[in-house]
Length: 470
Image (cartoon, rainbow, N blue to C red):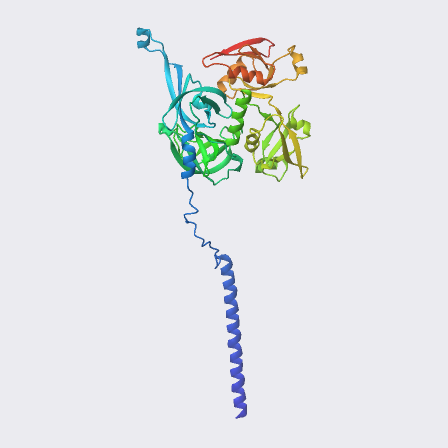
């Protein structure tokens, strides 16, 4: 009997052990399978922000900014006399074929004495400029000066009282994602205010890294040009200038000249009559993945210096080919439009701190900016100052070297057919001898609308030839 009970106990114990082992094995297998499934699927816990962001305190309030700016933004009307095609009626009645062409835009009063900043293209070729204030008072305006490169112009009206005005803000402090207002007169709808955000900074539309626009998605249309871009504090941070569109109307993007650039241009025009550019003296290209690989560096943002211009601040400060500029005065330089945009706010003899990478080491080099020695003349191309010792080779004591022909294909072809190419010497504009680019700039600035443009050039045959343009 005892043997039977012992056998039954042993059998039961073995069954329990077998069952327990099987259960442990299955549970372990399930855990491993669960672990594998948890790795491949989404995590059980997903971090979630439960903070409510629809509080009235967070929503932007544009009322104060609009009230500060709307009276300082004016309507600009440009009347130009243009030559229209002669018709049979003109011939029969002996009428003049010239016609009045009217264009409109906006402007911003920047002083109580009546100085107004607008776009150059708004008042270009104007025979008459009239200004209408937000209170419907009208004035005739005088053109003080323009800068085609930045599309900024300064005009002035004489009022019998102090005018509402806007002070320039600091566009360097503007942030991507910040709310802004565009104030102007689109389609002659006076005192229109639209809202958007800053979409990008240092935006170049030319394809030649010459511009440094603030990009916004505030609605801007024809007539807004020259108007104000303001932040929610009512600070003037830009002059609305361009839109990106196939049909000429707003489709989502607009562009403004930063206020720091506009302010510098205006100050130069007031003080000198033209723009005084501070030149760093470097040539090169923006870094990206492809260009970084080509020059053998891991740095994909910054400006790579390929050449140092002779007799410039960069050469005197010891900058070298192969340096990578990362900052100027603490402002990050990720592309060339960052560099050119910041330098447009500086003047000759200003000292800037250039942060650069050389041989994998970072260093800061102070550089004194020199006076502009290069000028772009759209009709012929880019000219630069020539050292006196080089002029002697041509038996001259004045003249500018043509370093690049016009970007307009028809003009480039015209000059080449006439024996004018890179390296030719431009000696006079409208009869004025050119000792420096300042002389060329002054000759162009003082030329009146409809006056012929006369350019004297020494061609590749060594001959002085005068070319006339309208």
